[in-house]
Length: 304
Image (tube, rainbow, N blue to C red; front, side, top):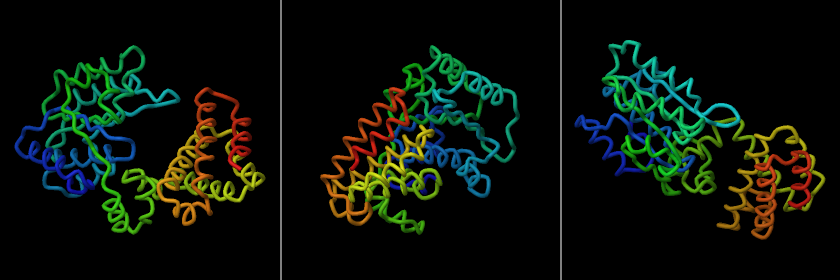
């Protein structure tokens, strides 16, 4: 399944060789910027590890549906991985029998940097099983950077880097999936983000709203900009997603001014720079837990 990972040919060869020769470490840290596909790469590697012959079970791993795979990820407002979940996963691995169909078992830790909270209790709980792993268990961790993972965890993993693919390759992949290739330029080869912008309804909606808002800003239409933004007066998470998409769109306009005419309602580079400044202020207020309703109103005025 590793061949399905776009780009990263050297990485795929290295992991494939280690896997087929039986030299794959029992704990692997896949590092990549958000949207590069580190999570997908982890599932591809897991599918090849568990089901070398492929088949329906391997496809289920890619979808996150296989019974031989356990997953840990951040929860709640803090985004931390609770120590309770780590202990539950540890117990499930140690006490449950392996399937006769699979070569082993996999524990995914998506966002390993989120083991840092609660004085590292989650990391300590995980260390106990990584240091003395049950036979056949593969630990697959992801993180945006190796530096943000606790040294005690990082030192016990073999780290590999997932890189964004060239924009042309990303566009070709999107066309093969019958998806708009323009997302390849917008997200600068971050193929996971490009796919999510089409396949994930909230992300797709945020991008659509951001494009509409860029158009209102280009027209100097404060009224319609405010009318759109008032929808986020009680939706902090949605507002953050909108701001992120605005950043991507405006960055694209600065890189290629024609993008503003094609995708952003006639937004000029000067208008994009203005939005980016307003966006930065709105993000600071959001991170400082400022009044969301006021933040929305201020942003509408500054955009236009």
